[in-house]
Length: 416
Image (cartoon, rainbow, N blue to C red):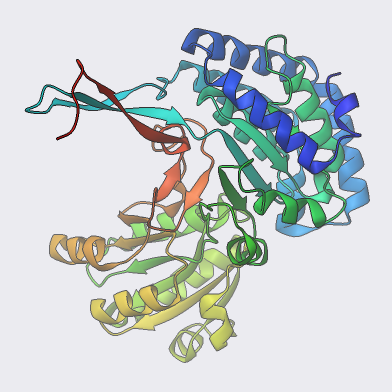
């Protein structure tokens, strides 16, 4: 395996190798990159038994439970899904060298704006080994080298996955760099490596993201936590609302686009709250609520102020009864992490106000927040969900992993 020698390299040496590899990756044709991606998909499937074995070692050593254990866990289906996602990525259009604009100036200069790779992309993430594959393959497709700094809980799984991918014939040496996860020193070196790393993307909990944002010298694309809301308006189809809430909360509660807070219009609260609490409780969801919610559904746990801003990432949800749409929008904009919010309503005017005025990356009308995902948006595998406003916002994948440059063609022009 190609990773053996890399184990003895320092973080800086790995980043220097990645910088050199980035120049080679940028020259690969679309056909060459797609061929490498298909090779990665095949090798992941071929080594599935070995991947499952080392993942069990990580699970046994981690002592994680709940949502974090679920994020670390790989099974046959998840490995198959990883390989499938890589094949889908190979089938997507290549954004590199895409012509965005072209024009001719009065002096005859021809100017065109094209997409180009970033160069070296650093990823800091927690116990999700699928991110190792997603990040590496997205970067390969866009001609970027990648420096991966995963969580120590997934160290053995990440090591094997990175070695398998780097070992595919034709992958430039050093283009998939896995950094040491046993110490925080590697994070500091990565996020401060100006001149070697072009952009850093943190994926994980609020603590990790805040640390990277506050300490990085390298530009950062922030992927935020998901304190996601669903507001059930007074005109909502209540059966639809219940179906959407249950999907958004229980389909996979450990991910950032699951619903964490439910707002209910006061005019329908007496009818809707007891029923949705009953259905959530039957689905093993812990329900917390404000004073009015507790009055309507006595078995609900009283919510504290901290509940409204917390991302649970587990089978837990908090309900607040709100007097108006204005109050709902104000509440969401105050407590949301700017990820994904939804309104369930039959009132088009209310829906359009919600879509305009809620300040989040993805805002839904009559649909589950679980759709905030690169694949669901048609982008293929994603690098994350950006909750910032510069460079990209929402699910970001291939196009967002590129920068631009101007190419200017002249015939001898000089400036007067």
